[in-house]
Length: 49
Image 1 (tube, one colour):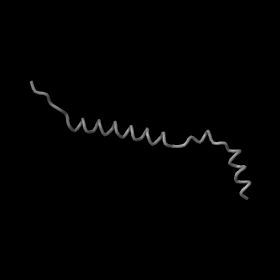
Image 2 (image 1 turned 90 degrees about the vertical axis):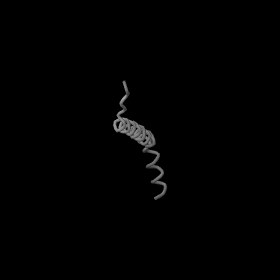
Image 3 (image 1 turned 120 degrees about the vertical axis):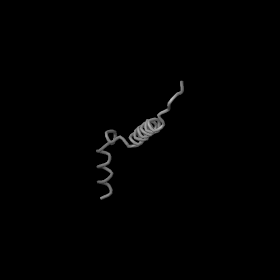
Image 4 (image 1 turned 135 degrees about the vertical axis):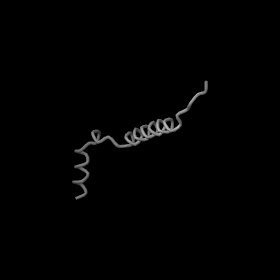
């Protein structure tokens, strides 16, 4: 009995996996806004003016 490979499905599954990994990497590159000290930023802008 011969083995039938679903090449198109294999390529699609690999592409989906790679896209998912890239999306996760992009999300982890974003800075976390919650950890920014707003009072310190306001003080810096007040000094500049």
